[in-house]
Length: 124
Image 1 (spheres, rainbow, N blue to C red):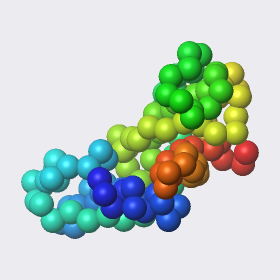
Image 2: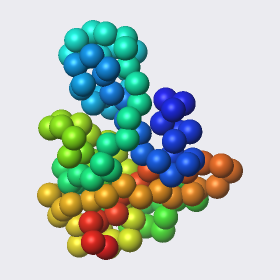
Image 3: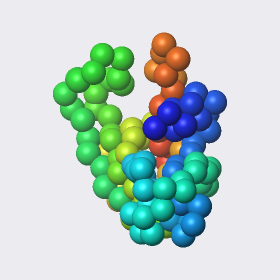
Image 4: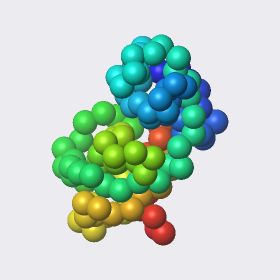
């Protein structure tokens, strides 16, 4: 996971990628789930995808997180079917979101050197 977080600090979005069968892999693993090789690297996908599902949070949880309500989305990336990741949707009212909305990766500095890959509706 270290390469993921180091890239995020540089405001780059990387996902694990199999050097042999070219499968994108997230969350990271020690071996490719398709071909079982351990020859895995990190590559930059397009950072584009669509909302596969989302949940609206109405109760405050972790200090420093946005004011409620906010939306946490499961995003299916364009690189391959089933390649999903999770993050908050920035800059949109949760009530305006729909499954299938196009999103693009964005980055949120949450302090103490941590930067989170998050999502923003395309064109927003």
